[in-house]
Length: 161
Length: 274
Image (tube, rainbow over all chains, first blue to last red):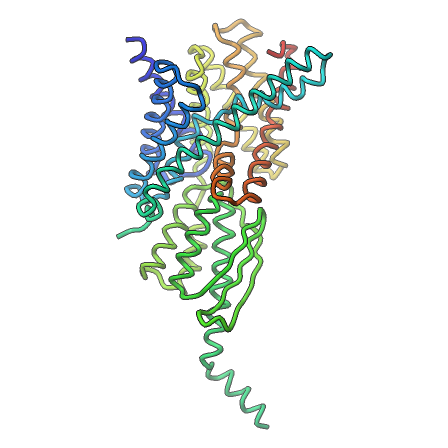
């Protein structure tokens, strides 16, 4: 029961986060609901994969991003927007922002102590940085795979027939 | 005498040769302007190439294009490869805007499908570029709500969510005001993240909520440049390494600035660095 409640809560807050962070990049108004739905599915899928199936963050992000990419390819033509205008805002709640800034925070902290502190903080800097890079990369790979598979649909999204 | 008459004749009735010249020249100016606008609104390189290719096909010209971080170089040839024009256009910065990206992509299809003629296309493009940005107060509210729900996603309680909401509201407003005053974006990021982290440390200072660490950690996440990071990775996968590097470094510099502001907040509030 806890898991189901957790999934719905995750989906709900991911949808709000997606709309809010997307609004900074001026999307057309009509894509907000699509972004919210796509983000909710993607983020809650990642939640399930990590907390129920025990997957690693990177693999789970890859799966979630692929699903977001698939949904974007098929939903984008209905909103007459390019696929990335739907998938990128939907990916925003999964951006590893905390890993990104911790990388640089720990880099600064490397310089503050002796050898053992340096090892500790350099390790934190490296592990945060690598995780951040890996997650960003698999997110981009994940949304790109469906675009390449369904090339004909995805680049015609903004065509009006 | 004969030379003169030929020249006069030339100006009155343009020969076919000159029509080609004019078409190629106008196509070059338009396409480079178009590519520079797409680059400026934060479109991925693969999008720019697809759209420009489609439009060049519709106009009936051959082209070659180089996309650099701050410029687009375009050479346009007529189909017989006898005349060419080149143009280097500086990026037309409009800030990341998916609605401009959508509008310009749609324009390329409209031109391709013959719904818009080439002469009107330039006017249409200017119209699209004039698109008003989203209402800033709405963005302010939505971004704050987004960051508060982000806090929840990381496991924060409702009090922490409230703290993050207020911290984002103030920090984001500072970012907006500084960018409107054309203050350097890096300085704006340092200031916004500093203020947000100081406000978010209220959880520690006043002992509010059970998850003050999460409130402090998520309070600056609205500043992480997510779309530039995703754009850069898309360019990497597509083999546009120069564009990838420049976009990635731009985003990294902003991330460094927000970490700097956050570190400043830790120092001022005298908090232990995790």
